[in-house]
Length: 465
Image (cartoon, rainbow, N blue to C red; front, side, top):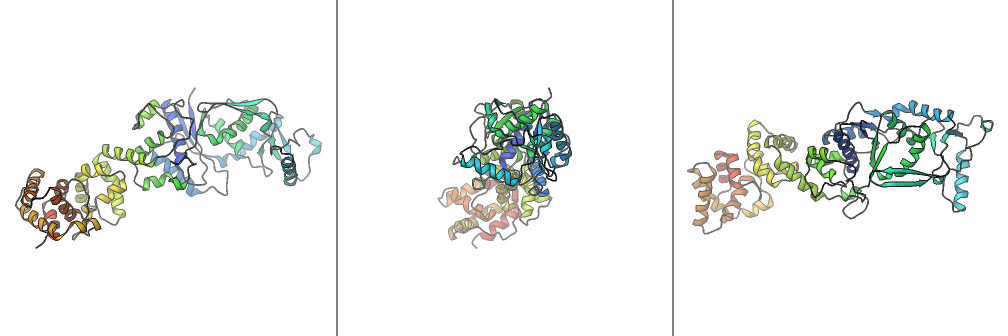
């Protein structure tokens, strides 16, 4: 059997972190088994679905590297096919027309509430003869669900989940205007797309029980289910915006790498021993449904930062430079070929300290800044009269020195010894003068990347005369 999975978001908002994890698990499972991963946009809610949300979902998946197979399926465009299945069920006696008015249904619910009974459709039109139809009243089409026994969802994550059929009422397949419901559309689309494994959030478990009624009525094969526990914030509460539940595109804007985000999402509810850093190739090789936990995963954005820092450190200097340059330009700084060369040369030191591309772009200020540098508050405090006097000594010594790390280090140590101070008292004012900041890559890396002329000019700007 060829494995077919699908990711089926509703385009009523951005692609959030929970949806991205669902997409990743579907993608990994299909790739693990040499199968097919499909994308379906469930845009049947015409009032809330937007083209902007569709674009955000597609761009988010593309950024994550979750490439889908075949063309995107748009659910609304298949409404005629969905209605066709409802009519087929009518013809087979597995569905029926219901003429109950909104007033009838509200009276029914009020009576159930008063009697302390569950609120559910009572099947009042289930066995009525066709002669009882109401002329000029458009009916809905309801499925004729089993009224006894139970429906069992054999779930790869949750185990066997049992639903008593007497609580699964005859739900609507076609509305009175002829439009199919979500419940019908999903089942028909999954069948027509050949979906073999449905991997989604456990908030769909009840839907699975209802959808099984349609599957069984049509005699279609039952898919394999894997319902994922939802994600919680660090406080154990349902994930929301206050926990940092952003759209995936926002994580991109915050400077995270897609490979780090894939690794992070993978570890939210799935494990492989004690492994924390898992490459995409390893994830494809190892991924299975049995290793998905039943408990809600808790987000931990410190772990994301740490993972991102790891992936940045192992990334190529040229690749990181190319990812960082657009962020530098967005800050209003020009990046020519010479600046790019300097950025690549400085990257080994820069990426050791940064955890995101945004931090990386912030840290290269010294490469793009024009003289005289604008000092931040910490750098300004460092450059005391005593520190400026040390800069004057460094300036004179550096002017006649060979421009290599070993020589510059020897000169700096000699001046530290002459002034009876530790090397940090030399390096800190030097760093402030060269970068305008109190932190930077290694000071000798900065000197070499800037070059002799620019370094001496910057030191001269802040040295006492």
